[in-house]
Image (cartoon, rainbow, N blue to C red; front, side, top):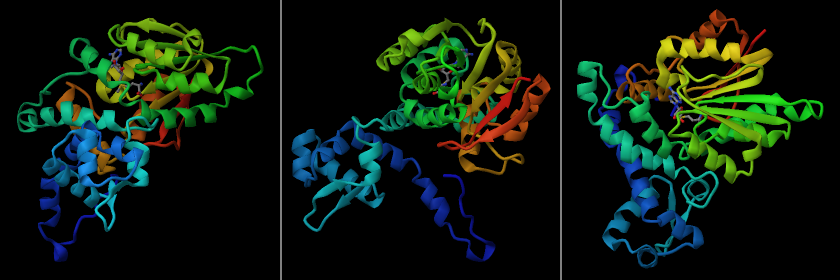
Length: 344
Ligand SMILES: C[S@@+](CC[C@H](N)C(=O)[O-])C[C@H]1O[C@@H](n2cnc3c(N)ncnc32)[C@H](O)[C@@H]1O
């Protein structure tokens, strides 16, 4: 959701407000349908309600309500014999065995985000978050369970970065050193390592999360191409001479002061000519859109003590202050382009 059309004074009705009052409904229906294997069952073959009931064990009354709502939302189709089937969108993104399955993000929304957002009135009153996932004690447990859920969100962008860097064109035997900061699942390093055998990745994350990174990297058969550093980003030793550093969705939880310190530390860790690549939910310079970036700023208000979303202009000014040159964007799949800059 990047734009919302706002009615003019002449057209004003309560329609949008009443629609937004039901805004929690789609993610919760999707979650219930995923949890009860509705999409998985229909991926095997189209079925009527009692067949879906027999396959899932869920109540016919419950399935009737959510499956019809899913038809209304365009995630299921229903024919004249009341046989339900998947749409191209649900077949690609809502079947648990598909590589682009988005169910982890939906579960995250219903299990973690919605309960915390219910405290928003209090958060706005005090300016204090419900939880602070930017702190290691609460954040480490949270991210252990979450980082693989968001792998599909960043993998296409990480592949776009790998194509752009074109490491396969580097002469054989020249090692390429990638520093994957706040690695999480390792998604950025994994896509880069897949793009060239010469890539070696150093992945940094909290000690509680690195075992998850190691497992995911092993699943991709890339363990011999990775080294791991356990520690907080502000304290860990990143080494030096890296050719590329990735900061995938970390600046928003760190907040401005720690983000600037992190950029300065990353600068020191890069070789001359090295590239920094930053993935974020960007907002425009006057903070009037896109709306998903503005929503994410409220998410950071609820879930961190100093987090926020930033514009290209802000991040680029921090990069320039740090000594980076040529701040630029790279169009990539996802809500915002990547930001790249070069250490001279
Ligand atoms: C939103 S996830 C992003 C993971 C991955 N880069 C991606 O784009 O999918 C943020 C990651 O940063 C790690 N993290 C957050 N704050 C950190 C800190 N201060 N020091 C080390 N790791 C941190 C979390 O454990 C988590 O793995």
